[in-house]
Length: 167
Image 1 (cartoon, rainbow, N blue to C red):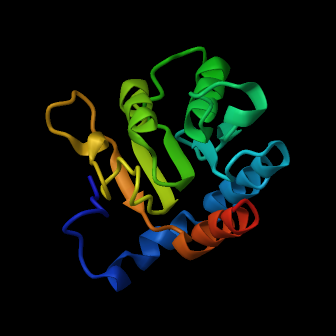
Image 2: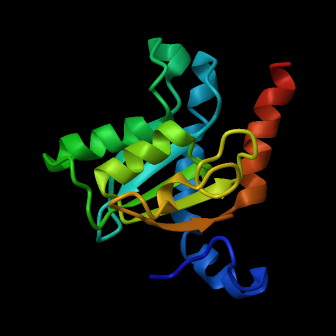
């Protein structure tokens, strides 16, 4: 399994892998753009089936629905599970604009998603390698592949623009 995370080769060697995920990340960014309408932080996520079809999508909805667990990843995972009729999302990929937090990393592990692709690092709460590395903890029974930094600058700018207007 390809490891495009800690201890990986120089960044230039990773660009072809990141380029492969640019189009789905742009779809996740479009989903993220829906969140600020309700005062939510613009984070968007997609779950892709093994053929690359979108089977779940979500954006942050904590403010909109008053639910602290309504993070983009959890919303997308719930939708994918409902669509497939399975809680196990083996073979699927989660694409998200911001590095997952510990809650979302736990949901990813428990849903058996095979791969996580994310854009911007979250140095304050990230659990996919920056602050914590929940998804690759050897004590857990499932460890998805992690690909980070896909359209990281664009994803980061989407978040910065939101916070610049909400401070």
